[in-house]
Image (cartoon, rainbow, N blue to C red; front, side, top):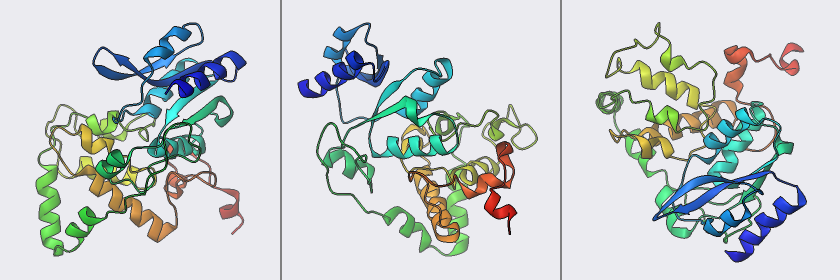
Length: 271
C-alpha cells in the first residue's frame, strides 16, 4: 500500500494529474475522496477496501465542474468499462483522465460474478480468475414465456420509484432523463406504471450497461435488475455485435436512432 501511495504522490509532483479520485478511511468507513496535491498528507488515509462505489459517476460530477483538470481515478474492471463508454459518448476527454488500475480480490470477483475483475493496467493487486456465471439468466430463460412474463411483472410491481438504479448508474448520463418525461412516466405516481418504467430503462441500458451490478445493489426492493440488463446486453451482442464497455470503436448502435442528437455515421450514409 505504501508503494501505491508513493506512486500517486509522484503523479502529483510531476503534474501528470491535478487530482486523484480514490477512497479514504473516514473513521471506520471507507468513502470516495478527491485527493489533491495541495494536501499530500491526505494520502495517508488512502485505502483500497473490498467495497465498490460508482466512481465514474462521481468523476462525471467533478469533470462537469472542472472540465480542464487532469484527473486520476481508481478503476476496477467495471469502472474501466464505464470510462470506455463515457469516452465514446464524448462525456470525458481521455487525455485528461488517467486510469489507475485496481485488481479486485477473488472474494469480490466471486461476490460480483465478474467476468473481468481487473482493468487493462494494474497498479495495485493481482489478477484473479474471471467468474463466468449466467445461472441467473439461465434460470429465467428456462421458464415458459407466460411464466417469465408473470415473473417480471411481479418483480416490477415491487418498484417504489426511488430512482436509485438510475442515480447510481454511471451510464445514465443523458442531460434530460426519459424516466422524468411526464408523457411517458406520470410524475407523482408511485409505484410507476408497470412495466413501462423498467422497460424504458432496460432499452436505454441495452447498449450501455457495463455489468457492474450497482443498480441491483442499490435497489431497496431487491428487483433483479442486473439480470434484466445482462440479458439485454447479451442481446445487443448477439443481434448487433456490440459489446458495451470495450475500448475504442463506435458507440452504442442504438444511439444512432436519433437520441441525444447523435449524427448517423458516414459509413451508413454511403450505403
